[in-house]
Length: 136
Image (cartoon, rainbow, N blue to C red; front, side, top):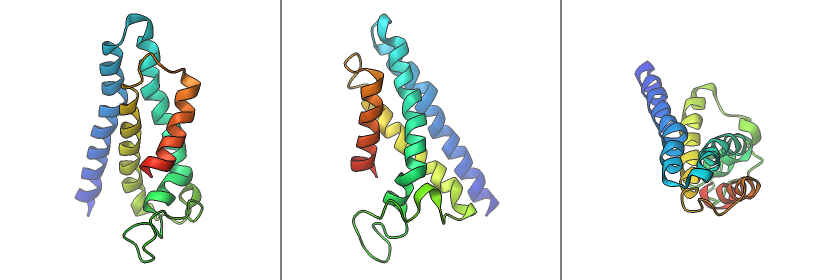
């Protein structure tokens, strides 16, 4: 079982490295010179904001106690049933982190489509709404 946890940590670290520095540098290099910092910050801000949203209600909505594939067969789980990871066992925290990295990179990929078109405040509002209603 220790090998499972070790591999999940390695896979999580690889996805995290693909998200924040790699995607930020890639998209930053594809924009005009005046927008490089804004483009890179969109990836970093996505990591912070989605991290908070995922822990508070994202895990509960997507992978909570009564989501798709669980006993009650509801399409969307109750976002307050496991709010702030209440009731998640210690063994599942690695899986929560693993799923969190994919939520972050999925939203950060959108930033490439809206480069030079939005302000940071609009980006923050958009990613909170998008991950809540589209990703989770």
